[in-house]
Length: 171
Image (cartoon, rainbow, N blue to C red; front, top):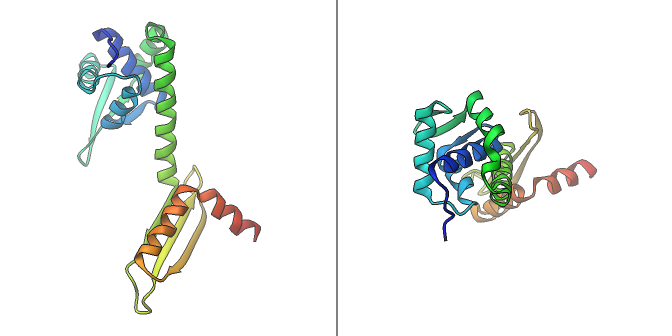
């Protein structure tokens, strides 16, 4: 059963979630973070629209993606009023925000691409691992006999890049 929050509490919850996500988020991702608190999607979208109207959040469009960005006034509201939201709800939202941000960061720092088979009949699997600041730590190209095997290699790398990195470094 969805949690029941009044309009003001919903706005505080959304501001809290946005703040936990680093101050900016794609709008749909923000809705998913807030959903960790068992909150209705429409209530979340309504709260985001109201926060934009109030000037506590700014919305941006980037190539069809909608982003929400908390401003200084929004941060002040969160700091002063977050205790209006139950601690268990805040913990759920903060945990979901942390997991979401980690997944996004991992997606940025780890890439694995599989090429179409070349003249030799093999696919090239290109693995890239970047540091948080964008510095390349490792680029590895491996041949795979089939696109399916290349996809399996790429998937394994995306799931656990540190294992491959450590094995290469210690070899």
